Amino acid sequence: MRVTKFEHAALRVDDHDQTLLIDPGSFTRPLDDLSRVVGVALTHQHADHWTAEHLDRILEAAPGAPIFAPSGVAEAVGEGYDITVVSPGETLTAGAFTLRFFGGVHAEIHSSIPRVDNLGVLVDDELYYPGDSFAVPDGVEVGTLAAPLGAPWLKVGEAIDFVLAVKPRRAFGTHDMTLSSPGASMHRARLQWATEQNGGTFFELAPGDTIEV
Image (tube, rainbow, N blue to C red):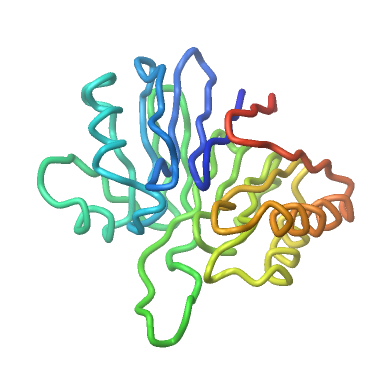
């Protein structure tokens, strides 16, 4: 399995001679080489995790590719997109990929801001991305964790505790476009420490970088 990190929250997973996309949003540049896309997973409805422009480009290159998302996304995107609504605890397939969903709610930004649905996604029992949450996939040995680095809802101490709880063999940072370069480096160092406490390896990935898992 090859995992590519793009700007902010967007990930590309290539395996089985197929492609799965996760959370291509407003901070992510247009993606290319989309003809092998067999599915798109959207963790929640906020614009930094999906845009109509991204979905249109994907579906033009890969017509009929299913879009998996919680109900809030289906309501936000409106008509014109066929959303497969998923819930915590469900297991579905996209092409040859197996997707398992965890969590259910977005981390709190502030008590004045309504919380929305959010689902973490586990791909082929290997790659886990929690979206905008610290939802731990209980009972799962996570091989590779895409760990959020920075956000209005994120306190770095909570991100450290999240990595310590998941105990991944490998981890890298994502959800990072709200951080300055020095801030991102500082947060990566904290999550590297957390990953190493359980014998894991942390990888520093820039947009376009890949990791083989």
